[in-house]
Length: 454
Ligand SMILES: *Cc1c(COP(=O)(O)O)cnc(C)c1O
Image 1 (cartoon, rainbow, N blue to C red):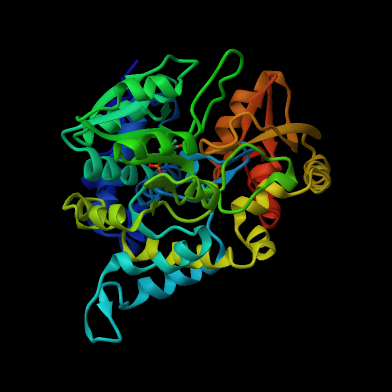
Image 2: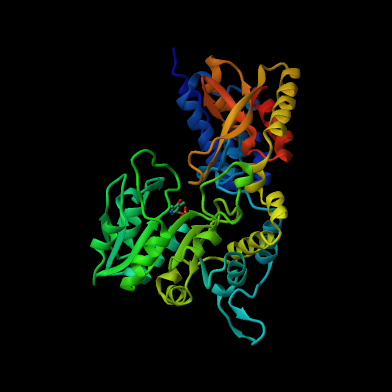
């Protein structure tokens, strides 16, 4: 028998054949040539399925070209039930923020220009008055992300000196980002006090001395300690540190700007509360519970924030105009809390009543059944994600697809849909959890599932 691979056409032969001409008419030659090369390589790898005629070569080239033309960063439907999913880009932005981004991006902006004086201004002036108004902080600084805000605070207040932190707060945030590593990068020397489960005021008092640069309080954002535990509240820490003239840096993690206690989400401090507790600097993310763009926000004492603003490191962590535009528009929504709950998608998703999720799951399941697929609406449990309310379980509803045998295969097919759908496998079934799906995406979700199952 002859080796079928010998029958494969050359790149040049395919490029000059009729099959390639429609592609060459609409895409650059080099790109089509790469796609042709991909198609031939695919045929060589899998001779049993190698194209046998012009029609099949055309299809193979079309697939290869589409793969090369597909954007790397694409929208996906988050049906994991995790609302602030870091791997899926955390908070979806409110419409007001999208509008602000489009305006700022399309043209010029007064990013670093003082329109009153007609002279150079500061990009760090934007969002400050809103942040002061909403949190009561003396001053505020916006940088690239939460980790950057923490590094900058430590580098400014404690470089070359000791940064004291409880062993119960040396947390890993995820994606191998660990607080002790971040602190080390700031140039501060990490001094650990207390034990994993208990840290007392005296532990801090014993460590405080002439080489102390700052005491750091890290909010346990993504796990809970229970049982025989003790730690020192920020207020008490602030009082102890005041005796030594030492600043307190409070890494709040998630920037909750509105209490969600009415929705049974308790235990996560609101930013304004954290500011009132008196830490010198409070740091947080913009794209967790705040529901805005990726950003790091430092709130605190005017002198400390001014020093951070002057730190040359700020230049390396600086925030861009699109982020500032989106953050300002998101923050402005908080002036009207009911509006914030409605219009900030992260908050709207977290506070949607489970009855409405159930009704939507039943409607989607019914549409799938009508199309001849096995689907049922089932109760589910979502979560907040993004390192916030770590133990909170959000009652939810999901569409369960298929049976145990094919959950993994279904999951893979949905991830490869033209609008990828990311669900979660539980008890051998693929669940599409609606806690993290905005209602207006239901038709898109249904269509993507139907296309993937077809
Ligand atoms: C999320 C988090 C960070 C990091 O914030 P990013 O915006 O992801 O850089 C730091 N500290 C805590 C406690 C967090 O929860």
